[in-house]
Image (cartoon, rainbow, N blue to C red):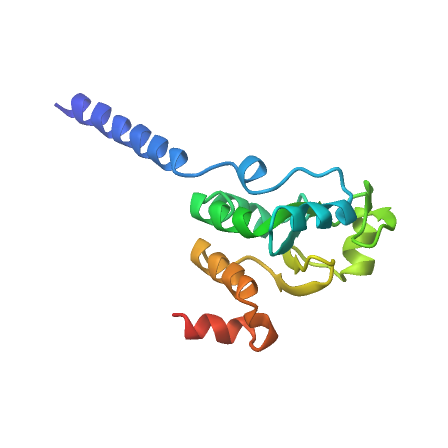
Length: 174
């Protein structure tokens, strides 16, 4: 009887983990968009696709909060659906030496774009840009949940950043 209970317990663990993994999707594939690193070109793409703007997820390899966001928030289908509908979304390595083109056509490294143009030092930084490349708002750190991240997206889409701080907006929506 005991042996049978152990088998049942193992099967339950396997099925629950399969169910859990099936309900999430890899953010590298389903959240982030592909890019050749020319953000001036991506602005054109965003306008043509009817997006509200561009989201850049500033990250670095050794960032535990970046990994947490990918594992707990950016892998959620409801998050992926909402953000893909409204934004083109790109990850950017703040320590990267890869050349890229900023929103105004200037070639630079990823780390110069992060540090010199956007003053990113800690990660993650979630920055939203309008269709002309002007930064609308930035959020530093991880969100507490997928729901809070969705609220952040709604805050930008509804242009609440013009009149409100996100912390106040979040409190009003609890």
